Amino acid sequence: MARKDFKIISEWVKQDSRILDLGCGDGTLLKILNKERNSTGYGVDTSIDKIIRSFDNDINVINADINNRLDYFSDNSFDYVILAQSLQVVNNPVDLIKEMLRIGNEVIISFPNMGYWKSRFYLFLKGQMPVTNELPYSWHSTPNIHLCTIKDFKQMCHTNNFTIVDEVISSGKDGSVSTGYLSNILGESAIFKVK
Amino acid sequence: MNIIKEQKLSIDTPLNLKSGKVINSYDLIYQTYGQLNINRDNAVLICHALSGNHHVAGYHEGDDKPGWWDNMIGSGKPIDTDNLFVVCVNNLGGCHGSSGPTSINKETQNSYGFDFPIVTVEDWVNSQKVLMDNLNIKKWQFVVGGSLGGMQAFQWALDYPEYINNAIIIAAAPKLTAQNIAFNEVARQAIMSDPDWCSGNYLRENKVPKRGLALARMLGHITYLSDKSMAMKFGRDLKQEKIGFNFDVEFQIESYLRYQGEKFVNSFDANTYLLMTKALDYYDPINDSAFIDKITATMTKFLLVSFTSDWRFPPVRSEEIVKTLISYNKNVSYACVKSDGGHDAFLMKNDNYFDVMRNFIENN
Image (tube, rainbow over all chains, first blue to last red; front, side, top):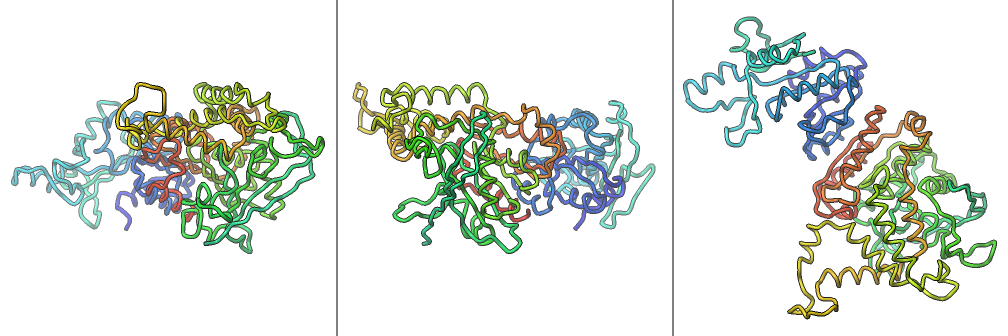
């Protein structure tokens, strides 16, 4: 089953692009992009289990920690550097995005929105850290150390002079798109293209 | 249990060596496993490391132990001989049947001894290509090797890109460091300072530089293991109950190393050991003036594998190769496997390592 952020990323990516997918997991996104966009490139993942599984998807995959081993990749060597649903697990999101911008022409980042009404509801009414479909972990076992809202992300981009060139906010199982003023409440997950 | 037989290819076409010397005729001893399919596209070349040989899996008549990579190669194993046709050759300069210091130089009717020319990784690859042609193999689906064997797999992709689809390079390095060369030099000095080495002509003198070769092996063996694996296996265990305040073999590790040294002397030739260490020292393909042309031309898909506890060729050395390949946009994947086994981890069973190998091979 293709994730909805994968579908949008595939629509954004131009034909024959060179792609670097950070935190590529089992390589599903790269497989889709290689097939639909005739792209080439590499996935990077720190988990050996993911590396092993990604061979099934016939992608190039490098077993490395994206927090500190992006020196593998030279300046401007990719059309897109993608971070799909992994922003919240990295040690230093701002430094990582700077690295991604060094390596790629454009950067695509998708992340779960902590401003989503269900998350707000969880904390506001239940008084507990949110546990949702997109964020299924309890507070003590979560790998998600840098969760943010859409508003937080935009502010971080502004502060660091990252230019947002495109964005899609989605919510619900049907992936319906919400825009405008209420997106930070209605959006379950967000995808940004940054330059 | 299937008993494996080795085969011999005698070649009379001269082989031009990197050193400028020429070997006019030579023998290559090799073994094959599985069947070459009708399309001739399932062939795998296994390249051996410093002390390896062609006997990579299975049992020879009378063997109580199988070949050196029997856990990796065979029916149902990651390199599955039910589907793949596996070839392994004893490298030139070796001492297990291919022409080397212990074989007879047809021109002098004497054993080569120290006169056997220095061979390089590139020379081995050239001689393996001769064997490939003789076996009527059009293309290797995989060339696979660990350590010095991995260097040969890399060189295949550089020198014969149209003859290799995938190179699997395990626990290797793009070149030796000063520290690596230093260890090799101590090993060579151990051999060459043994009076029984007889300036390299010990065979003619009916002697064997046993002490020197054993010392070289003991030193090498330390660098193949990790501190942790030695600690787990031996710790500070004693052979006797108490320390004896003497210089006998007291700790288990001393006993183990001596045993490894003595065992090695009975199965390996000192001059071959010297040659193999030189091949390692000289290897440096990325600094070759033709490297950019070669790497640009190759369409080979690469898999690199390293092991966390390997300090002879630690992960960072494999990563040098990975980084270079990425910079030329090559198809490359890399797995760094957690293991306490040190450099020798590439010879040991390890679930992640074997899954990496199996899954990469099945999908390519």
